[in-house]
Image (cartoon, rainbow, N blue to C red; front, side, top):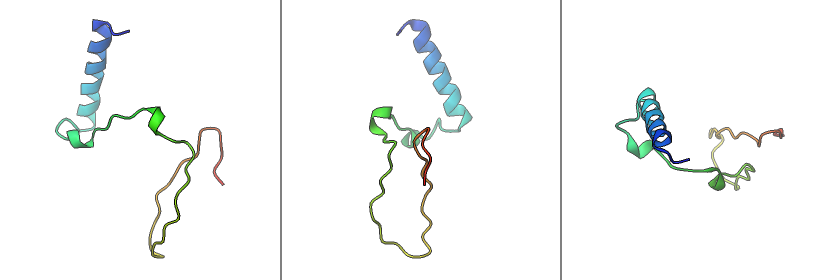
Length: 67
């Protein structure tokens, strides 16, 4: 699948995406990840924080409902 056309299309789409999100001059905000390093089961550690601390939202695995 690594034909000249496939590679050209990839880099064309990459350039369009970086331009659309104004990231062409911000390479430090670009990360290379794949699904192997992402877990769908979130098990947060116990954290002691102040009462005014607002935790971030976490989505559940597709097809499962959070409780």
